[in-house]
Image 1 (tube, one colour):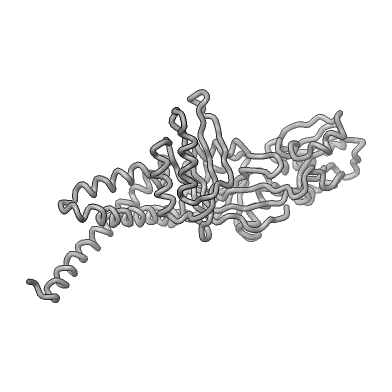
Image 2: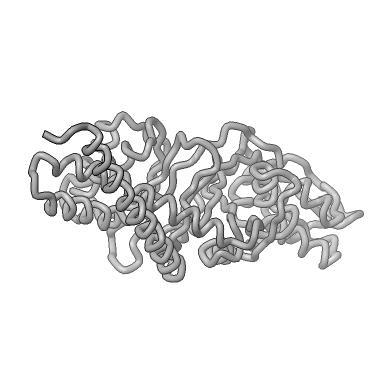
Length: 370
């Protein structure tokens, strides 16, 4: 029998080798992170991780150690994933936060509400440009709207979340208070054309219904519409936008608070190339497609029940290359610890394809005024 000093000496020698191997593995993980970033791939690859775990368990000669080995490698993989995220964060030379629209947009209000007034922000014309800037590392974070409490989901953003390998790392609510804005001196009687984002029109049906002769012209963004009205300088044109936009572009508020529903809010996601959440997560968003078989949706939903999770939102979007098949996006609350989410994703894999954790993040708690 070996004495305790000899055993400890052997353990120290083995640990020294493990430390060197651990560092080597982290260095390779950084190379993996660079490849994933260059090819717009997700840091989390659940199918690959599960295959690695099974492979390592099969390599263990003592069968009784197979499960402990899987636990060891599961933690090692988690640390490798974290290192990939930290490494990409450390390479980022920008602290800018991107949003869609121009200064005065509700997107800017969401940025300020989440990051503070002094954050460095940059605006883009479209939602896709925001996602592309985040994915390429041009900006550190992007803030994009996903849902309005009165007019529903913003489908374009859900489609872009499926297209780009960005992670949801935060959530923000903005109280939407629409006004009709016109050039100085204009009156309601002068107006013939109203410009706004489609969501702006959808959120003001009662007010617009009182003016059936007005022509409504969709624009990229409410604030861009306000800016264009200011540039035109024509009393016949008006915009549906915020008071903040009126201040930015020197417009008069011709009719305040024209939204049809009190408590109207827009929910924004904060997205990043890194999966590291801002704050302690208590909410998560996942996406998956279902196998085209009977009962797959029911079985998938039962997985959430079994895990004690609460579905707060479910969205389906058509797959562009498969008629009558859909991609689902689901927000959930409950115990969103990493181990629970891993078990959930493994459970979904039996009935679903392309399962992906879009992010675990802290849910918005306060409602900000635009």
